[in-house]
Length: 212
Image: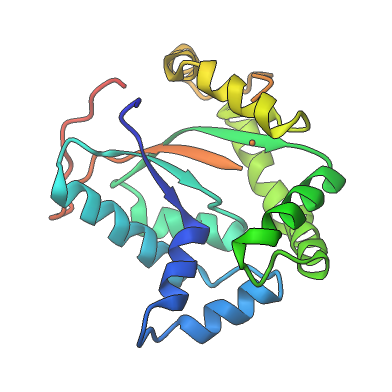
């Protein structure tokens, strides 16, 4: 609707895990089951391939909403190493809720998702990993003034209604108003996803960047 292509790091990893003949399938399953973060080289390769395939189909589709990445310092450094000059992080949406709410929602999802990590033991491990590894990454982006915190403690329907009524240009206006990257205390009241824009085409030459 707003010109973004949604890419879920988790969905890409699960699809690769289930792909016949995948060299990474068993490794991905082991990391996901144990609530650990999959090695960055795997996740980055899947994200970049998905971005390239999207732009190959339509070169104008060069804006991406990347969900669930980066999750730790290694992820962030891997992104910088592989994507510096190809993609720019415009801003971050941080969906914040209590551990209890998060676990309950994932357990409810697990009734139909078939995901091996939708169980209490794996979820508790993932929360520990989040606190130790992911939260510091969010704080880095907060210092750059790029984070919008969303109150995800409300019901799923309430959060969904808010997101549907929240025009994306309001967030983009924030980015334009804060070109220096100075920290701002912005609480949009919105859940763990990130907006990226990529001025890249398949041959890795930069396209002309346009205001979003």
